[in-house]
Amino acid sequence: MLTPIAYGLAVLLNLLIAFIGLRFFLTPHAAAAGYGVPAKKDGDAAYLTIKGLRDLTYGILGLALLAFAGARAEAWYMLVVALVPLGDTVIVLRNGGTKAVAFGIHFATAVAVLISAALLFAA
Image (cartoon, rainbow, N blue to C red):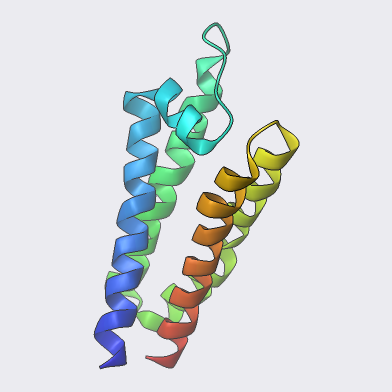
Protein backbone atom coordinates (compact mmCIF):
# COMPACT_ATOMS: atom_id res chain seq x y z
CA MET A 1 0.00 0.00 0.00
CA LEU A 2 2.81 2.43 0.84
CA THR A 3 4.76 1.83 -2.39
CA PRO A 4 2.15 3.26 -4.80
CA ILE A 5 1.78 6.35 -2.60
CA ALA A 6 5.55 6.83 -2.41
CA TYR A 7 5.99 6.45 -6.16
CA GLY A 8 2.92 8.56 -6.94
CA LEU A 9 4.07 11.47 -4.77
CA ALA A 10 7.58 11.30 -6.26
CA VAL A 11 6.23 11.32 -9.82
CA LEU A 12 3.88 14.21 -9.01
CA LEU A 13 6.64 16.32 -7.43
CA ASN A 14 9.02 15.64 -10.32
CA LEU A 15 6.38 16.52 -12.91
CA LEU A 16 5.51 19.71 -11.01
CA ILE A 17 9.11 20.92 -10.93
CA ALA A 18 9.53 20.09 -14.64
CA PHE A 19 6.35 22.08 -15.34
CA ILE A 20 7.69 25.04 -13.35
CA GLY A 21 10.89 24.84 -15.39
CA LEU A 22 8.94 24.91 -18.63
CA ARG A 23 6.92 27.86 -17.35
CA PHE A 24 10.13 29.84 -16.85
CA PHE A 25 10.96 29.18 -20.51
CA LEU A 26 7.51 30.05 -21.86
CA THR A 27 6.33 32.88 -19.57
CA PRO A 28 9.40 33.93 -17.59
CA HIS A 29 8.06 37.11 -15.99
CA ALA A 30 4.81 35.49 -14.86
CA ALA A 31 6.79 32.53 -13.51
CA ALA A 32 9.12 34.85 -11.60
CA ALA A 33 6.13 36.63 -10.05
CA GLY A 34 4.73 33.25 -9.02
CA TYR A 35 8.10 32.36 -7.50
CA GLY A 36 7.70 35.32 -5.19
CA VAL A 37 10.32 37.72 -6.52
CA PRO A 38 9.06 39.47 -9.66
CA ALA A 39 11.63 40.10 -12.38
CA LYS A 40 12.24 43.56 -13.82
CA LYS A 41 10.86 44.00 -17.31
CA ASP A 42 14.21 45.27 -18.57
CA GLY A 43 16.25 42.82 -16.49
CA ASP A 44 18.50 40.07 -17.79
CA ALA A 45 16.18 37.31 -19.03
CA ALA A 46 19.10 34.87 -18.96
CA TYR A 47 18.65 34.39 -15.22
CA LEU A 48 15.04 33.38 -15.65
CA THR A 49 16.08 30.89 -18.33
CA ILE A 50 18.74 29.48 -16.01
CA LYS A 51 16.10 28.91 -13.34
CA GLY A 52 13.87 27.23 -15.89
CA LEU A 53 16.65 24.94 -17.04
CA ARG A 54 17.54 24.04 -13.45
CA ASP A 55 13.98 23.13 -12.55
CA LEU A 56 13.28 21.25 -15.78
CA THR A 57 16.50 19.25 -15.34
CA TYR A 58 15.71 18.42 -11.70
CA GLY A 59 12.27 17.14 -12.69
CA ILE A 60 13.55 14.97 -15.52
CA LEU A 61 16.44 13.65 -13.42
CA GLY A 62 14.04 12.68 -10.64
CA LEU A 63 11.81 10.80 -13.07
CA ALA A 64 14.82 9.03 -14.60
CA LEU A 65 16.14 7.98 -11.21
CA LEU A 66 12.77 6.61 -10.20
CA ALA A 67 12.35 4.71 -13.46
CA PHE A 68 15.87 3.34 -13.85
CA ALA A 69 17.47 3.26 -10.39
CA GLY A 70 14.50 2.69 -8.09
CA ALA A 71 12.99 4.03 -4.90
CA ARG A 72 16.15 4.13 -2.78
CA ALA A 73 18.10 6.25 -5.28
CA GLU A 74 15.08 8.54 -5.69
CA ALA A 75 14.79 8.84 -1.91
CA TRP A 76 18.38 10.05 -1.61
CA TYR A 77 17.82 12.41 -4.53
CA MET A 78 14.71 13.87 -2.87
CA LEU A 79 16.56 14.26 0.41
CA VAL A 80 19.30 16.28 -1.28
CA VAL A 81 17.06 18.23 -3.65
CA ALA A 82 14.95 19.45 -0.68
CA LEU A 83 17.76 21.97 -0.20
CA VAL A 84 16.53 23.86 -3.28
CA PRO A 85 13.08 24.89 -1.97
CA LEU A 86 14.61 25.56 1.46
CA GLY A 87 17.07 27.92 -0.24
CA ASP A 88 14.24 29.40 -2.30
CA THR A 89 12.45 30.20 0.97
CA VAL A 90 15.43 32.25 2.11
CA ILE A 91 15.84 33.90 -1.30
CA VAL A 92 12.22 35.07 -1.35
CA LEU A 93 12.44 36.43 2.20
CA ARG A 94 15.74 38.25 1.54
CA ASN A 95 14.49 39.83 -1.67
CA GLY A 96 11.24 41.43 -0.60
CA GLY A 97 8.88 38.52 -1.15
CA THR A 98 6.06 37.80 1.24
CA LYS A 99 6.21 35.32 4.10
CA ALA A 100 3.08 33.72 2.67
CA VAL A 101 4.87 32.83 -0.57
CA ALA A 102 8.14 31.92 1.15
CA PHE A 103 6.53 29.54 3.61
CA GLY A 104 3.30 28.67 1.81
CA ILE A 105 4.99 27.69 -1.44
CA HIS A 106 8.72 27.11 -0.98
CA PHE A 107 8.93 25.82 2.58
CA ALA A 108 5.81 23.71 2.06
CA THR A 109 7.42 22.25 -1.05
CA ALA A 110 10.54 21.36 0.94
CA VAL A 111 8.36 19.58 3.49
CA ALA A 112 6.53 17.67 0.72
CA VAL A 113 9.87 16.65 -0.83
CA LEU A 114 11.14 15.43 2.56
CA ILE A 115 7.92 13.46 3.10
CA SER A 116 8.41 11.95 -0.34
CA ALA A 117 11.96 10.95 0.59
CA ALA A 118 10.75 9.32 3.81
CA LEU A 119 8.03 7.40 1.98
CA LEU A 120 10.49 6.22 -0.67
CA PHE A 121 12.95 5.05 2.00
CA ALA A 122 10.09 3.11 3.63
CA ALA A 123 8.84 1.58 0.34
